[in-house]
Image (cartoon, each protein chain N blue to C red):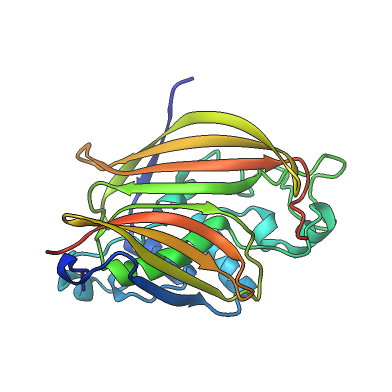
Length: 162
Length: 136
């Protein structure tokens, strides 16, 4: 299978809203005039911004889509009755490497490559299936700006809170 | 703003409360900006009645984002070269999280940090590592 590519335009408004949503009031994320006077010299996305590439993936499965059933609640607790719950799993690990600064106006091409898969048995959630995903973010000049390695885990049952 | 090698020592620590009494509202904001609308984070009805959890819980990436706030406040803007975490426990509405960075190694113009975020009961929710560029 060919590696999947998604285009992620980096926009000031998205950065502002993202910074709010991680409870961060650093003016570097909000105010271009302020940012221009800093060492960085421009608005810079917060360090975890890059996983928001999900917004630009037309097939991203954790977003309700036109004309498709959604597994979250509506009239009943799940919009897909009689089917096993599909939470899509949990996030186990996330690692970023920052190679070059990113700024509003950049257009990133994000290439997703499958990584390793492995299994483990846990007392709290039964059989765990781990899947690694590598993403490379390149800007409009072809420069590698960010690398992301995520590890997702699917659990056999909900994680015991005991 | 940036850290200076001449003023840093292994074992130095920086700690911040990154969120108090985490609201479902902030979790919903994070769903909106990240694009991750997994109902486990924003849909109490689905999460309690269909998925079998006691309540919605925060995206791991929200906890990482909150941890990142502490980190960039400490190392300065645009200084991070690496930032990685493992999610060790779930984060729930009402949690108050404290994030901490400890200097593990100073290597020329870079510092390696060990990271941990704990909840109000002292339970670790995130562990991690980061590397940042520092001044002389």
